[in-house]
Length: 318
Image (cartoon, rainbow, N blue to C red):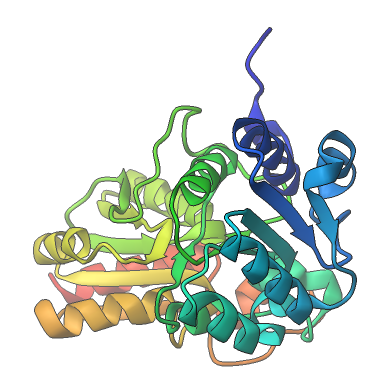
């Protein structure tokens, strides 16, 4: 049987297929939903193959977190998925008390982060989930960039007893990592090596950051691209070492620039190795119904904006 090309499938399908693998390996793994099972592809992938491990809690996200906390207390490993806005903003207090404060082994999954919720508009576009989940004690915060990394992150989540939040990009993503990639939350991944400027990205934006780094290399500008699949814990040492070589850092994320990846980078650098930093992302605004390119241009964090920011900071440090 030929190996599956995971990157040819939607990320939500990979999420569901991987849950089936985790359940086969450990029947304590459970799939919890809040009536968005089709959006998460767990209907029909998980509900059909593993109906005894599938629980649809209905349109009650906060209650889903409470149910998951109780199950975790009894030794189960619940993965709870819904749209990012509902997984974090709506259920934040329940996650804080029943999951993080109690240190329960619950895995919260936010589907369709940031501008990837374009068709559903501002109410569904959550630009602050990395920030608010990162601020929560005991919580680990992950954002994989492609299907293979998603699988590696999910296997890690199932194997480690800790409250965890993971962003889940819904559509297909270009292949960035091979099928045997490993996930270490303590380590950033260098995707492009350079000495002129450091570029820091996570999740959905890493594909665009890599495109920009490759384009700039043709121009002779060498970008040191660091991908952070884990925003918390945050690999401070790799960033500091890169910033010492380049003297300038650009961060890019599918988030509000306040509190997320860019803030994590600034916190580390301001305390341990101050350099000039440019943060790209959503400039402290709510979303709207719009496509990806419109939002990139409006808020200035698409591929061309990443490249321009790298050029400007590289020039400023020479």
